[in-house]
Image 1 (tube, rainbow, N blue to C red):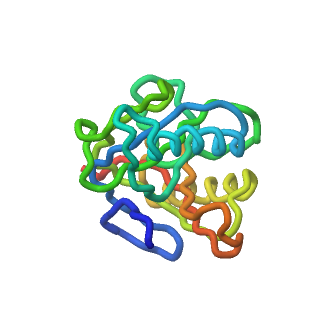
Image 2 (image 1 turned 90 degrees about the vertical axis):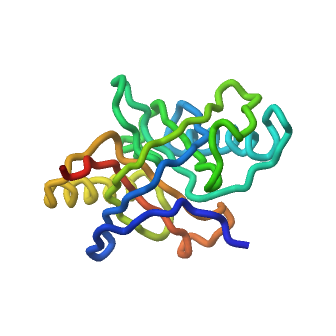
Image 3 (image 1 turned 30 degrees about the vertical axis):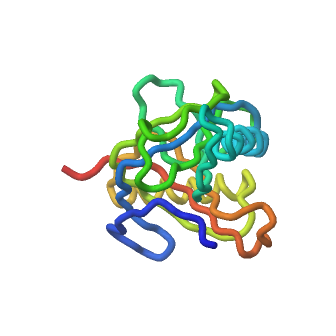
Length: 191
């Protein structure tokens, strides 16, 4: 059975580089600390608890992909990319890990999380630049892909908003050579 992914409109494609528009989305998110790997594991566990019944109605919510993670922004009001950030140095830090809720769900009709660390958020329409890649998404590889993404965005005169995020689409038992990953960052829409 296929896992639902957020729909988007492809605006431009050049090899592995894409410009996409995403509609408004609802996400469950958690802030966690640690390295990129520690944050992924800790955040995933908390969010999985929410969708597998850790909520005020004990309801199960369908799993969607990707699972995203990005560095938490220290600046108030800065937009944060839908997916996850990149641990460029491997140092511990604060991360935001997100699960996108199934299409058609709203904050009003979703059960409230019982874990106070899990919060629900409505994301506005957002334009992203994306690079898709396969294999393992270790910190070094993600750092290289992120630098490539930022360079391509700059070369096409796109203004980046927020941190680069890492999106992972496969369960951990997927063979490494079949894994689908993306680095993505929100950009300002042209006027």
